[in-house]
Amino acid sequence: MAGRFAPRPQRAAVRDGMPRQGTAPGRVRVWVPDGPLDLGLVLGPLRRGPGDPTFRTMPDGSVWRASRTPAGPGTLRVTARGEEVRGEAWGPGAQWLLEQLPRMLGSDDDPAAFVPRHRLLALTRHRRPGLRLTRTGLVLESLIPSILEQKVTTLEAYQAWRLLVRRFGEPAPGPVPGRMCVMPAARTWALIPSWEWHLAGVDDKRASTVLRAVRVAARLEQAAGMEPVAAQERLEVVPGVGPWTSAETVQRSHGAPDAVTVGDLHLPGIVGFALGGDRHADDAGMLRLLEPYAGQRHRAARLVLLSGRVPGRRAPRMAPRGIERL
Image (tube, rainbow, N blue to C red):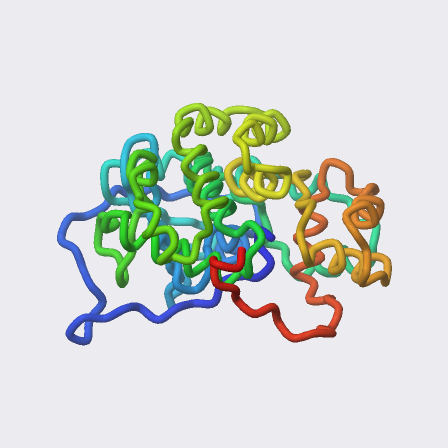
């Protein structure tokens, strides 16, 4: 579920007592948003677990991202000081990342379009004025980890993403903190042997879906310029990509405010409990409760998750399963 929590700052990896540093200066862009902006809330959905090698948050509040852009690999460091946001980028994709910086930080998003119909959401929006929906303009980097999250626990999916990116990705350009990596290129994903998928805990069904997606990577990336509904339809042409996966993708790649996630194990109960007092709500019940927010249903669900009003556990957390049982 995109953006359930804001990321916690992480400690910089050190070598000989100092963060790893590079010598080449990066390209810089300074941008002034037209309203409050919380980097953690905006960019948090792009992090796939605390060990994500493509994402770092630092004690000084800066956020680092390593991406594979149409121009090549790039690393972006984003910091907010007062009303200004400063982006610094390295690598062949540096210029592309800086051009996309405002969109990634929600410049295309319109928080004022959301009209709260529940007191809980009104209070949450008031307490989180810096929430905007990110738009990366990159489809594959959100699609592949979403596929890895199908039908497994979050911990299993995060581990698979971490292992595969570290093993088959490439070092992120620039003076990055720790072992940051750029995710593999489409061709590299296609050449990963079956046993490496198994070692990462990925079953044949999810691995095959990733392989089918990367074979048409160029067509899928073109969906970044389409409307979210049309983009979801294109993604779902790939066998193994359904409404859950396509929604999780366009929430990040398009900043889609109405792309509500259906088919999730927990979200209907959370939304049902927060907005209707029904912890046993199914997808149909969740969609009924979100009807007043047509056009903004993803934002409404995001505010529910950020409100902290979730039903208490009635059973132990689901244990990770070996792929031999999937």
